[in-house]
Image (cartoon, rainbow over all chains, first blue to last red; front, side, top):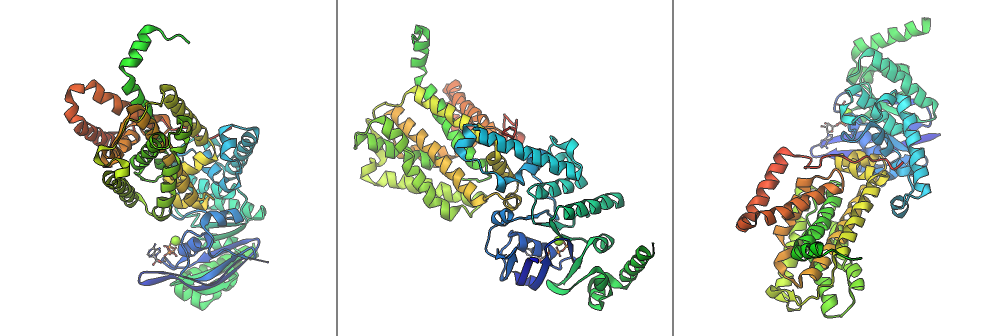
Amino acid sequence: MILLQTAGLTRRYAGLVAVDAVDMDIPAGGIHAVIGPNGAGKTTLFNLISGVVPPSAGTIRFAGSAVTSLLPHERARLGIARTFQNIRVFGAMTVLENVLTGLHAHLSATLPEIVARLGRFRREERAAVDRAKDALALVGLSARADARAAALSYGDQRRLEIARAMVAEPRLLLLDEPAAGMNPAETEALAALVRRIRGFGTTVLLVEHDMGFVMDLSDTVTVLNFGRRIFQGTPAEVRREPAVIEAYLGPKVAERLARREAATRAG
Amino acid sequence: MIIPPWLDDFLWTYQNLIHALGINGLLALSMYVVLAVGQLSLGQAAFMGLGAYSSALMTLKLKLPFFMVLPASCVVPVLFALAIGVPTLRLSGVYLAIATIGLGEVLRAVYLNVDYFGGALGLSGIPERAETWMIYGLLFAAVAILWLVGRSGVGRAMEAMREDETAAGVMGVNVGRYRMGALLASAVLAGLAGALGAHVSSFIGPNEYGFEPAVTILSYALLGGIGTPLAPVLGAWILTLLPELLRGFSDLRLVFNGVIIVLAVLFLPNGLLSWRMKRRGA
Ligand SMILES: Nc1ncnc2c1ncn2[C@@H]1O[C@H](COP(=O)(O)OP(=O)(O)OP(=O)(O)O)[C@@H](O)[C@H]1O
Ligand SMILES: [Mg+2]
């Protein structure tokens, strides 16, 4: 089944086409990657999918229905969640409150119920706190629940964003450069976390420049260059594809990835 | 209840000040609700004027009793909020501020030039029907409601929007609806304050609702802060009391307010009461 499908998706900015007629099919389940050089349009593609910017042309279908004209909060309700390349936690709020905002679309208490502190409101709020704590445990941030989000380290803020996006158990999780600025040990832990997320049934679509990370995790890889989709295939196909090697990987990285794959298979 | 004579004297002597403290507290809350969602919307004085004029006319021309006039005083401000909300809510920051200040100036010109509104003389002979307990009852209720709402998913959504509207939208917050909701709440609070003010002072005039009060109301929240609903009320009380304490220098009042705003912005970016409320309701 196809979970996410873009057709002719285009976003123009003054003087350039950031995303240029991209057709992309992401199957339900698994981990999928979007790669490409700086400025290729990867973040813009995520902005289009999450509804943060409207497309100049083209359509987006999610779980069988057109979402092209829906606002971000409406797409969130359908199960599209994301993190940001330039971290966007709510700095003055606590870590737990940040995660609770990820459940916003799932809270149903009305203003009178809130003001009267009715049992339904309090039960819903307690259930939300429990879920938020579970999400924090998933990313290993339980001990920081009451800290101000701005006080967290860079890596912890990235993990907080993942908890905030995952708390509502989305169908699709977009991760924009989740390993940026992480050391090898942290990247390793992140890979394990992404696999666990896949295990929950959430489809993961990620942008990442760390090719080892991408090739190890991904079922399919989509390659963008100057806003255009130049290839979509398995990691093995991608690193063999001349157009991808020329536009992005370069011969050395392609060779190293090939050796690495051979070593993994042998070992 | 028997009020001791000394208290009775005190209340009588300071009646005007006591009324002003309560009414300005409501105005501070009217500013708070829009700032709380990150909107620099400065139409509070205009909404107050609409509440004041519409309620005074209901009392003077329609002879309606005050228990009907007071709730009805929200209607006109809310209608204006709906009308200006749709085109202006896409604006942000200083553009929204200018558009909403513009509304106040347009209305001032209307009050001045339309005879029905009394022109430059305003409306006089308004019966003094607003009681101290009504003012403080509403102020208390408003603080309590905003506090309870602040400690819930709604409060979290408001603060998230204030920090990062894009991220809040992606988390599922309907930012357009929250902006409109905040503007409507602001109109209700300012409309009530306007009606109460008109019915304690017996006279209203067009200049009470223009640019200068709009800035004064903003300074309440700048001085007090917006960490909790009490913070802007504290700001309003300080800025209402200080001129009384410095009565000899009444010419300098505006200068004084200006200096306070500058000092608050420079040295107290989160206001005097910077303490931030928790956002969990259970
Ligand atoms: N809001 C905007 N206004 C104008 N141009 C933009 C805007 N957003 C992105 N662009 C341009 O669109 C192109 C694609 O940018 P985008 O951020 O999508 O690239 P990217 O693939 O995510 O790059 P990186 O790997 O560096 O994150 C770039 O040339 C960028 O400058
Ligand atoms: Mg990017």
